[in-house]
Length: 298
Image (cartoon, rainbow, N blue to C red; front, side):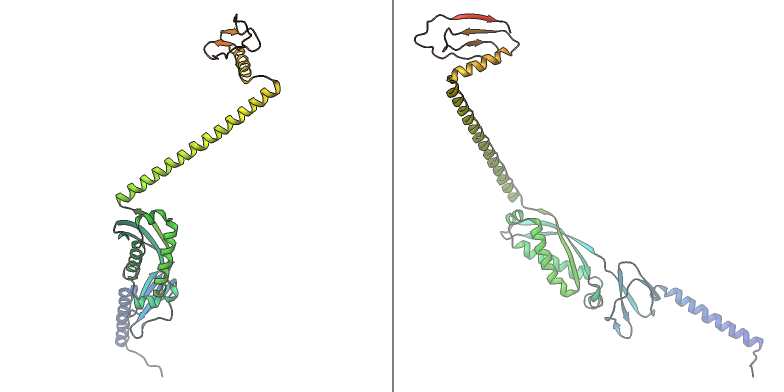
């Protein structure tokens, strides 16, 4: 038989239901950030429960997760991140070196619960920064400023990234890059390097000049051999051939010139003017001393 409620009883039930609903709504509104967990793109979560502690079996991926307000979800950025450092290092020979560099890293998502349990959310400052600085100080400190200057930056970067990976891989962190932005060497080293570089450039300049002079010497030798062969074939003395060449070029000049011609085959012309002047060679002993002058208008 269906039980009937009086109006008073129905009102009491409605009142109690309303109170419970309001309390529940207040509870949800007050604890909504602990109940509704949104994990965004590039993030992962680690769950801590009141009863069992850290859930090391899995990490929570992107999306909406509903958990008990008494539990805690810690969200990690699992994308590649960057830490920059400005570090003063004492070199092998006791000189101070200023090194600016950056490290690219990300947590290993497969071991994220263990990283959270063993190190914590502030693992960048607790784990990565001290390990990186200590390793760089040890490796760079074993070099001299001259070694750093002479060694290619890519070689140093590769050595450092390999060393850091071996150290941090056991700590559930993946090192993706190590980049040196600048190296500030002591002034004495900079001056010495500048002086060496200047001497090197000067030496290369001298080598270049010597090479040019050697080629010019070869050119003149080849030219002289050509003139000699030409004179031998035509039975013309080199001085006479040169005089003929100058006379030919004089004919192409627009200026007036005075030419004093010899009176025999061995006599060379004297050309007086602005552009060409040749000195005559000794004439033949049998040649008469008379010279014939002729003014030509070119």
